[in-house]
Length: 126
Image (cartoon, rainbow, N blue to C red; front, side, top):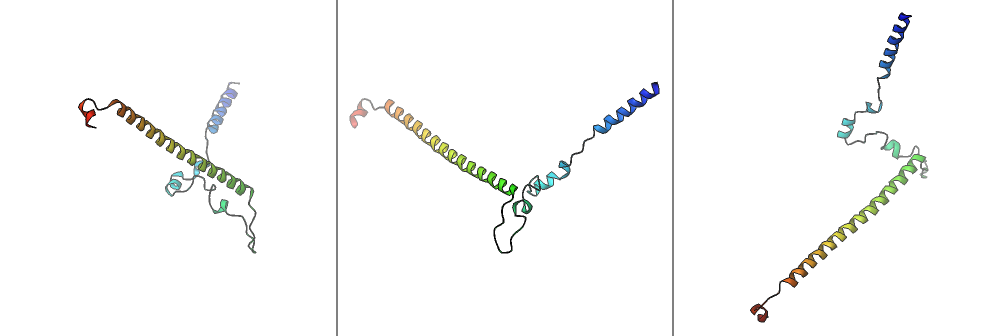
């Protein structure tokens, strides 16, 4: 009986050691090389295989968009409209900041002009 428990414990230890090894295929792509070349991390995310149609008609008719192409175009349109919206908000914020700055400066100048008035003989010269 003692021999059986030793064998079971030994076999369970090897199974645990085998389970702790993990290999990932996603890191098999050399990310540093891709970044140095200016390429995206995922080679399937952009390029002629994903952006161009799968086939073309010989008579020149436009090919229908694939499901993923249509989804990608809609997503890019949403991103473009969001960029336009945010750039408008940014321009508004810049103009408002400039306007507030000018208002504060004019208020400061008004206070200075109201406090410093000529007195005595300087008042008579005018």
